[in-house]
Length: 458
Image 1 (cartoon, rainbow, N blue to C red):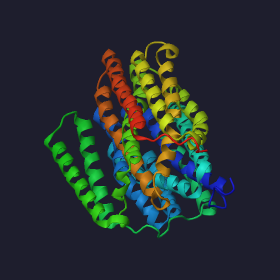
Image 2 (image 1 turned 135 degrees about the vertical axis):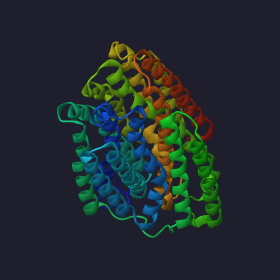
Image 3 (image 1 turned 90 degrees about the vertical axis):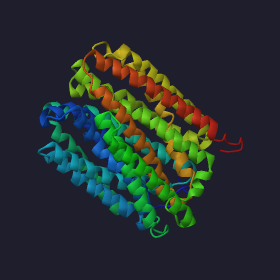
Image 4 (image 1 turned 180 degrees about the vertical axis):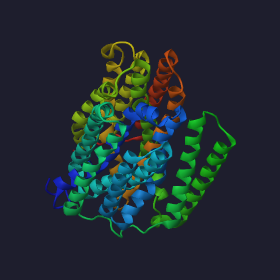
């Protein structure tokens, strides 16, 4: 990869970023499998189960943008390592939590750590690799995340059954230690001091995203738009407007230069991310719950049910990352989400008491093929859409959009989790229809907003 990297240790740099981001992937997939066991042990309600997910997603969504901006100012490696340390300590706290309140508090700290490490792992990739090497690196990074997601559910399910749900949080500790050691020894600092710290913008962005996600979380917990929900949404939108005004006034010194939104591809990628990850977020939370509660599956069996999804993505993402540098992102980001939508439509036949091979596997496999065509191209396109000084902020913004889509999906999931018996299966199938519409709309967005590369591009 000579001439396409700006670091002495490209292999170790890629390894460090993969291990760091895999923390979030492992934790998310394991926690979803462990939800019923947490419910039994800590005596939580359906709303409490949502908060187990949302307590992590809320700070993650609120702080991703500032996490990327901090890396662009203080140095991406420094902020990455800080995020890993925080995430690992919070994971241990989750394992020791004696009640639901302490668990939710520790989950929130995990979200803060993930908000620091996720955008900076991608920001480091964006600055360390260029051209086709960047496509290969992002594809490999996406594959590692998929493999981590694949290992998480069955391993977590086995731990839940053999040891208990608390043991699942210890999975993060050895991964975190390895990521910290490699990052400190081999990852070169990037972007340190290059981007001025936009403190007013950072505060307003955090308050706006935090207030909006809090209001959505409150709505998802109570399934009704209370006055508090409307007040939160109104305050969040007002803070968002104030953030946009400050960013406009700061011009080139803004943490999120508004000139980025003058680009139709950047706007299209933002909309696509929101729709696609909103659709996917519901599946990842709901399918294990449906199988365990509705079909009496063990946590290990439910974890294995998701295995084809991650295996396919892990196998194909590296190839798709390389192809995107040659073909451009428009075609894969159109076809991938549409195929994903078809997979969701196939899950309308999902029956937790029926045959996995005929009622679950076709939908899971089709969704996996579609997402394999979209994950790496989307990440590569986002990193390529901005200058090198803003890759951390841009990846943080895109990740925030993805997590916000997932948060709304969790709100829909709450209505499904509240059901039981045949009503649970029916509610899941209805959610699959909504997810299919969102995914297909994401593909249409890519076709309408992304440019076709010129024939001369190689």
